[in-house]
Image (cartoon, rainbow, N blue to C red; front, side, top):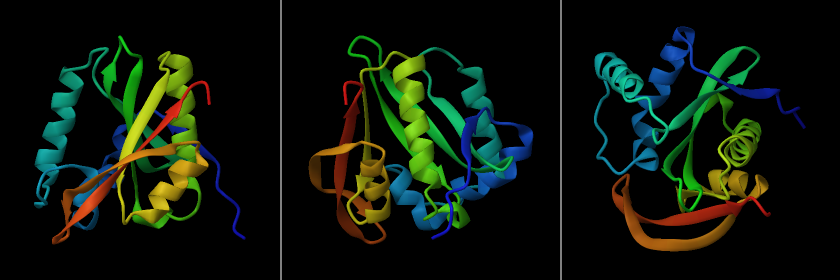
Amino acid sequence: MPETPTVSLRARTDDDLDVLFEIAADLDTWEERGPRAPRPLTRERFDARLARAAENDADSDPVSLVIDVDGRAVGTVTLFDFDFLARHAEAGINVARPARGRGIGTAAIVQLVEFGFVRHNLRRIHLQAIASNVAAIRAYEKAGFVIEGRQREHAWVRGGYEDIVRMGILRAE
């Protein structure tokens, strides 16, 4: 069995932008990453999106970290939609296709959860996945998330409706 590589989370650098653009522009996984209909993403639009996000840097904005394996970016993890009164946020992850299926996503999610609980004093982190993304759901379960519910036929994915699986983890767990 192949060994899981050493995974760390870090701030984004300019050297990461080509890999992160490839992930963001991947139309095959577009519907799994958001509610908008797929469309080609140009490098100019990608760069403009990053510039807008940098301008809006505030406590309630997303916390996005690069997933690093051996000094190379292979994806991102993000905490967003913070509720500072109830102390919770949503998590998201994007991993480059060659890095999938190697335990990298699970390791990154575990580190993101620890970051959210320890550094942001969250008491709960939740996420969602389309039901057919069994590998992602399994990775989230390995990281300690439990299935809390399902929204039936909630997402339009590659020509059909799919259920959304809602998952969460509590700091007490």
